Length: 307
Image 1 (tube, rainbow, N blue to C red):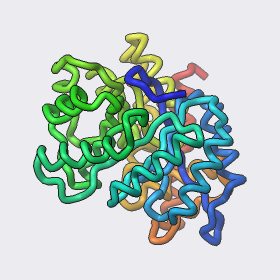
Image 2 (spheres, helix red, strand yellow):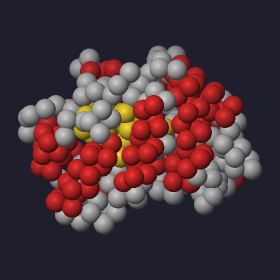
Image 3 (cartoon, rainbow, N blue to C red):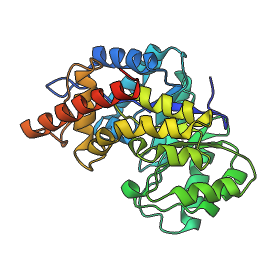
């Protein structure tokens, strides 16, 4: 199962569950995989930024990757985040991922790539180190990396590097970049959207193929993408709007991951909401706000369904 330009739907960014003591919780990881699959996701992405990959040791990353790939067992494609300061490290983890059944890898640029030529050169070296048989998703998240990707440069890279098959679109604001990429023509690659899905209906209308994000209600992402693909944008936006207050709470920089994990815990997907240190910890007031928003969400969904 290999990642291609035709990838579409919802590739959920998987959380990394931890125990109260901060160890990886493999029992919860198994439960989380089944939770995501039950909600209808098209694929899964592990070891992403919101999967707390930078907080894992190399040994932990390899062990978690192998465990998740074995649990998914080719039921859906799995993309492995391999971003690293060293290109040799990227290549090593990428080859290990592909050897264990990954569909492809995701790479975010290293910091300090302040010009188009530097950024192009960095990815040229990455692609050379990976080899042509490793499909790549470019993670465009300048709010985190500090590296700006122009539409023109991305189109150039798509034409020059056939293994570049996907863009994870999470520039902000970035809707016009998405439009410029689609209008440029040439080889059409998959575009999946991040940022918790906060702009998903608009991104779908601009030519995105789905979402690659970790919102704690994957079924919303799945249904919004389905409705948009059917041309039912008003219905898609009505459904999306019901979840928007929760999406907004999850999108808080520095705190949103704790919110996401607490909601996953309440939904029975993981046993514990712990984020690995240094990470956010919810207060009593935070938990109350989550409860209020989830109660309001339930009422809005009932109203949408005519209950």
